Image (cartoon, rainbow, N blue to C red; front, side):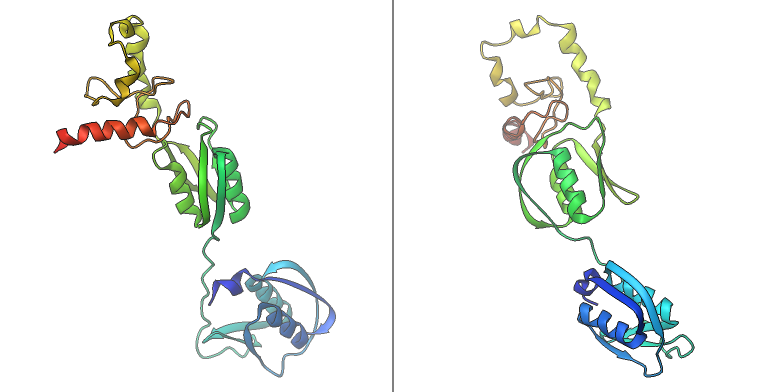
Length: 249
């Protein structure tokens, strides 16, 4: 069955209307083919507002003591005591809708709220996650692929929770002790070369980790942003990777 039918929202109002007329109106709104047995006739009283098609069909069948089955895209409606010889086709739920994320300098929590609004699900951001900003041009992307794009190279990760997703940090506390040598030796920068700003561009040896120029947090080579202060560090990590490539060969 096409996802278009599953996402169709139905509006029905019946005050004693014949069941056959209500079924006909339902399928007309959904624009699907149907077959209705002639012996189905009873007054129907219901009000449905912005109800998904399958849910509206199930409610109407319960109200009229009928059941439905789907064969080759055609819906068959029959009384409960007149079940077909073959079981009804099980219709899978529609996949999450694609979301549109286009903007410049969008904060992480704003992006998460926009995904939640468009997809109709919960998207949480843990309180200690840095509120990074993103330049996004994703006119149509699935929710999980959008979350992949947000977390890639930022020190963040996403996980599934009941009713949606949560964006959290990716094991940041284990790396914090690496900052202590810098704090204990404030005179160290004075013995550095005359141009200390060039340090992040040199090859990163095991005893000299690559650090954020703003907060001195230890970086990984695939990060684009510092997960602590949110500084853009991709130009530093990219240069460090290029410097290390000859040694790796």
